Length: 160
Image 1 (cartoon, rainbow, N blue to C red):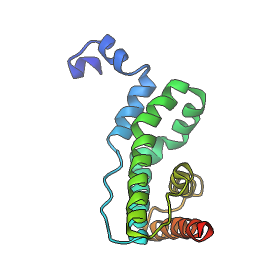
Image 2 (cartoon, rainbow, N blue to C red; image 1 turned 60 degrees about the horizontal axis):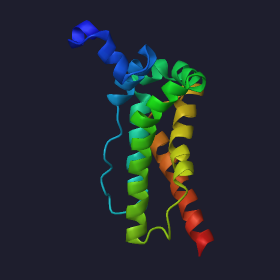
Image 3 (tube, rainbow, N blue to C red; image 1 turned 90 degrees about the vertical axis):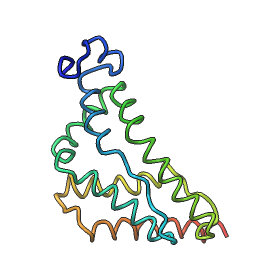
Image 4 (tube, rainbow, N blue to C red; image 1 turned 90 degrees about the horizontal axis):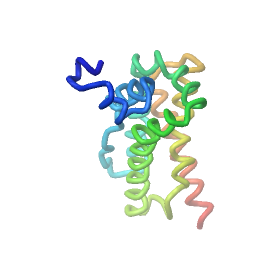
């Protein structure tokens, strides 16, 4: 791979601590979350986020390696760090932007717990697509968006 890139192996290992980290960066890096457009309302914005998670986790390349990748992440702290930098942190930043817009519009009284919000998107999509063999379709997108919206609105009511 170094030869194809026109660099020495040492250059690759300075950037990535292992072959697995390089592969993860390439796989996930190609599937970075996209910017979520402002739809003008909380539910529409959450649907944008859900659609992005479903599209990326439903990608055939990702579906083929995701179960093994999760096992590797649990065993390899270095790989976990790469996954956080390339995938989790950008996802959280975009979810934060959606939540901040909702607060500015008055749709939410305050920011939800952003780690939990992240889990509300990733967890159901991962389980549905990977463990339960479900399809990444419009129904899944709507169910995830509805679930997150209900949770975030419950938090809003609880705060008042």
